[in-house]
Image (cartoon, rainbow, N blue to C red):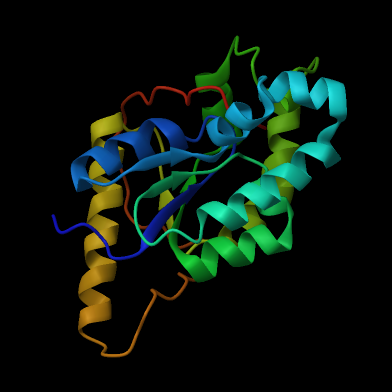
Length: 211
C-alpha cells in the first residue's frame, strides 16, 4: 500500500487499541509510529499515572496539548493519542485539520473485558471501573466523532483484522481524494456510521496510556 501523504492519527477510549494497532499500521505502511503518551513520559521522566498523582489532571492536559500541537505538525507517520486528548478543543481541531483521524470505537463493556486487572490507567483506579468507562464514553464519544474523519466499529477483532480495517479505510480515503481534485482531507462520516463490521475475536489491550 502506498504510504499516505498525510499524518494518520488514532483516537479511542483507554484500551481501544490505539498503540497496538497504530504500531502495526505504521509498520505495514513503512512510516514512523509515535505514541503521544510515550513522548510525554519521556519528557516528564515519569509515568503518566505518577504525573497525574503528583501534578493533577489539568497540568497533564496542558502538557498534552503542547505535545499534540507539535506532533500534528508532522507530514507523515502514525500517531496514537491518549484517551482524553479530545477533551480540549484545540486538540480536536489539530487532529482533524492536520491529520486523517480515525476513531476506534468500542463499547464500555468490551473495553472493560480488555482492561480487567489493569492498574496503569489513572482514571480507572476506582471501585467501579465499568461505571467509569460508561461515564467516559458518554462524555467522549461525541468528541471523538468531532475529531475523526472515520469511525471504525471495533467489536472484538484480532489485531491483524483491525489493522486491515484501518488500512482499507485509509486506501478508500486516498482513492476518494484522488477522484476529487483539490480535496486535501476526507470528510467526516455521519455520526454512528461504522467503517466496517469485524468478525469476533480478541484484541490485546494498549500499552500503558493516559485515561
